[in-house]
Image (cartoon, rainbow, N blue to C red):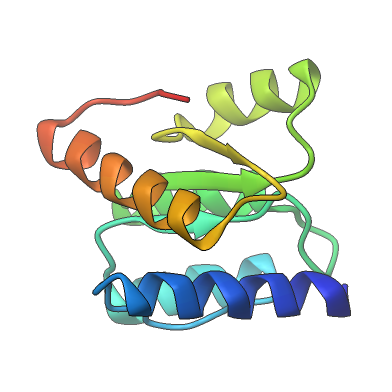
Length: 124
C-alpha cells in the first residue's frame, strides 16, 4: 500500500499544479468518508484499493449516498467485474486507468467536475 500512497501524493501534486484545491489524501474508506464530510469537495478522486477492510467502491458509494458527492475512480483495477460493481454501487463520473500522467489526471478531474456540474454520470 505504500506505493499507492506515493501515487496518491503524485496525483495530489499534479492536481495542485493544475490549479485544483486538494483537501487531502485518505488511505482507508473511513478516512475518505470523514475527509469528504468535513471538506465537502466537488468530487472525490478514488482508488479502488484502500487499506482496511473496505475498498474504494464502498467508500465512494457511502460518500455519494450520504453526502451527494460523486467520485472519479483512478485505479489499476478496472476489469469488467470491478467496473460493473463500481458503476452500480457508486455511479462514478468516470474511470481513470493507472498508470496515468499528471496531465491525464488533471484532464480527467476537470472533465469529471464539468460532468458533475451538469448532473451527468459515467464517462471514460
